[in-house]
Structures are given as C-alpha cells and as structure tokens.
Image 1 (cartoon, rainbow, N blue to C red):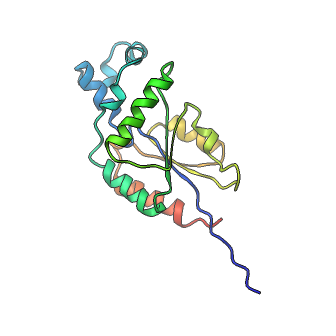
Image 2: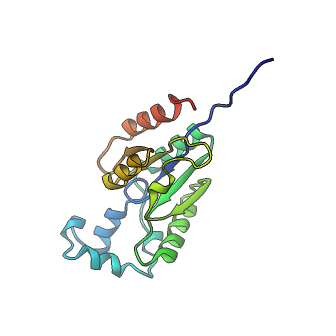
Length: 176
C-alpha cells in the first residue's frame, strides 16, 4: 500500500496600498504636496477622503503587474488581497478598492478588507502559517506575532527581485 501525502502550501495575501497601489503618490498628487508627510493634518486628510472614489483612481506602481503575475504564476492563481479600508468608510473604500482591482484586471481568489489582518495569519483549517506582503511594519509585526510569515515590501523603496525571492523561499521551501 502506498500512502500519498498532499503538499499544502500557505496562502499568499497581498496588501494593496503601498504594495500594488500607489496610495501615497496619489495622496501627494491629490493635495499637491511634494511628500505626503508635508500634509499638515493626516488624520483630517484621510477623513476628507470618506465617501469619495479616491481609491478607485489610485495609480498602480510600475512593478505591480510584475508582482501580481509572479504571485499568480507561483500559486497557480490561488492568491488573495488583504487590505485595510479607510477608517469609518469601510463599505465605500472597499467598493472602490474592488473596482480598482477589476480595472487593473487583477483577479485574486478573495479580496478581504479589514483593519485586523492578523486574523488571517494562520489558516484555521490546516494551522499552516500564511504569507502577507505588506508595506506597513506594524502590520507585519502583528502578522508575525500571530504566527504568520510577514514580508515587508514598499514598492516605492524596495527591490521587486528581493521580494520575489522572499516569496519564493517562504512559499516553495516549506512543506506542510
């Protein structure tokens, strides 16, 4: 009798803003500032986006298509979006983020919009750690604290080749 084991892979979750969508560049352009940190009141600035189509008009990074294609090919189309909605504008900002994904022809298995990303760090059925690619160190730390594999990637600062190497390492080298 031969016993066959099915190799189970971690799920890959991609953040949008800062990873594939140039949120900060769009913010700078929208408010006509050289750097988003030049905005006098970032909290008020974000509140002003409530109820708008801002998230539907954000440009993608020049590396976005390459990253999405890489993850899509690696996972055979089995990847997900995990992005934070705008605070107090969950329904509207999630709608426009979904619109943005469709407009750019990005087709994740699932698109999840939550401020509590770490809930997805471990697959509930298999107990396998999942992978998050995110631009925010705080999100990566929360993800790791819950047992997941967090990869920090800021598209406007980090190498696309380096992040692809990290994704490959964590996705292909681990057998569960």
